[in-house]
Each structure stands twice: as structure tokens, then as C-alpha cells.
Image (tube, rainbow, N blue to C red; front, side):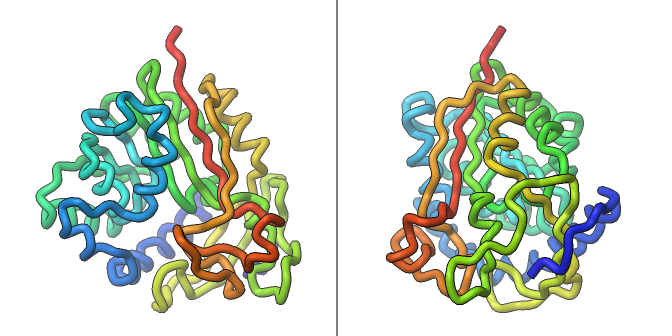
Length: 283
């Protein structure tokens, strides 16, 4: 649970978050479906869902042959799934331990990939070249304080006509008290520059605990997310909201096809995810 809202210097928040994400790597190596990727035809459930949503907007309905930049790629399971689908992939993350894990997995699978260690807010400076497709999914931008800067990185990485895709936890979901007996609001939907300070030893995958439990996250309403992309001169092509999540946000959630959802009687009350597909238009 979030202990409080606080103004915090980005360098302090980043250092704390990095320690936490470094701790998550060995836990997620155990909890993720990594061994399933040994099957040449297997893609992660996240990427299977995302590629189906993207198909109407991609050349010939596929990422095959496209240069793809995956922002906040973590240990690379989704990145390498995109590569299995035929993309030339570059994974970007701020965690050296996560990128080392991703590189090791890529080597074991015999998949070519480029890995870049940088904050996503500095991605355009750190990453060479430009891309047909920039991808981010899932559990990502709540870790960032400045969405205008984030959207500018996305736009800067894209070629004219290139596509951007994000599927993430819905801000309305993040305002719900995950431990309440029913649907009850507890956390802010609208951001005001303050971070939510969390002390939580658990992680969203597996049963292990992290040594560095303090993290900082920021609330961003849907309007801010969309408007940051518009301000970066990306054309919004599609916005969707979903009822299922690929992780169990709250103990009351039940397992359904495609992930986890609220109990059936509550499923239409609170969205779990949003998806945005956008394009960089040439001038």
C-alpha cells in the first residue's frame, strides 16, 4: 500500500526504484514463462494479446521485418517474443541486471537483439537510429513523473509514419484499494506532481520478496496520457479499455481467459487496462 504522497527529487526516486527493480530480476526469472520461450513458436501472452490488437494497423498485419524499440523492456521476454514474430528488436531499460538477464536469454534462444541501458526519459539520446514501431506494455508509465518528456522520446524514436503502441494498467484501476472487501477508492486518479511512496516487499509475479521495498510512482489520468502524445505530434488512431489484466492486481480478482478480472458482478464497473495506438505523421 502507498504510505503517503510526497514531492521527491527524481534522482532520489530513480535510485530507489532502480534498487527495487534490480531485486526483481531473479524473482521474475523464476516467475515468468521463460522456459516456454524455448519453443520456437511460443510468444508471451502479453505479446500475443498486443499483436492481435495491433494487426489492423500494421503493414500486412504483422511486425515481421519492422525495426521495433521496446521501452522499459525489463528482462526481455516480450522483446524477444516480438523478435520471434519477425521484428528486429532493441530493448531499453534502466536496470543493468535486467538487461544482462535479457541478453543471456537472447543468447540462449539464438535471437539477435540490441539492449540499451538508459532511463526511458532519455531514450532518444541513448538509442541509435529510428524505428518503424515503438512498443511499451505493461506496468510502465506510472514509474515516470513527466509524461510530456516521455511522449517526446517516443516521437523522437519513430520514423515518419511509424506506429506507437501502449497497453497499461488503467489509472482508474490504480485508484482502487486493492485490499478492500469491495470496490473502494483509495489512491489518487489525478496527478499533482507528488509521488506515491510505497513500501512493499512483494512483486506482481511470484512469491519472492525484494530487499529494497521502497518505490515511488506517479498518478496520470487518461486525459494526460493521451494529451502528452498529441502534444508530441502523434496522431491517435485507437483507444480501448479492457476488463482483464495479465497480473493479479488484487486478491479478490479471479483468473479468467487472458489473465485476471474482477468478480463477474463487478467486471463492468472498473476498467483494468487501456490501450492506445498512435502514428507519427510525416511533414
